[in-house]
Image (cartoon, rainbow, N blue to C red; front, side, top):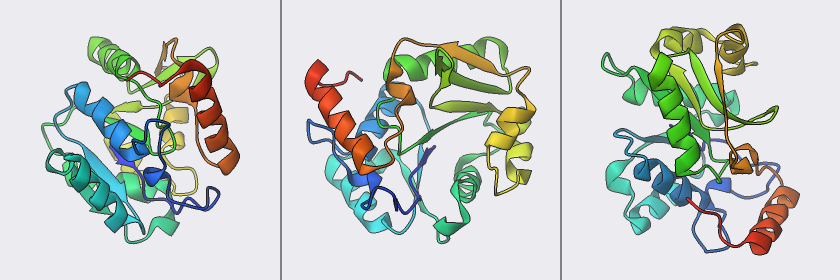
Length: 204
């Protein structure tokens, strides 16, 4: 699940449509990473920029493998987008769901794979990547906490579930700090461009 329903008010323009130095949009880059990991069902939740995001998916050829759902009330917060995504793809055969944010475009195949493998090995309720003490995305939720996510308070969101299972969740230590980069403001975006210029294109 890729949550891209926010208004990007601090950024001042849709984060899904921002581009990496190579010209690829945030949304396209994230979806290509998830596709490379072999995930079978992917849903993107949009908001007021639904038409623009849909256009990117069609132009890049990603539309056929993605279910795009529009959140009619993005002002209700991130949890409302997560609930829509769950309604779209979660059924009796779904044992876990991987959730990432459009704000974190630097997730990589290595990090996503590490998270999935850690969950598959012992089925903890929550798995997330970490670089030292910093937690990143994507976050994988096991089926046993789905109902808790549905019932979580809107003001706290999915963090309520993460905190409730703090003693049994799994933090997967990774070397790629890209999973912790939250691109929220113009300054964050400029820093991303500068950092990429220093080390070349980020790998998938």
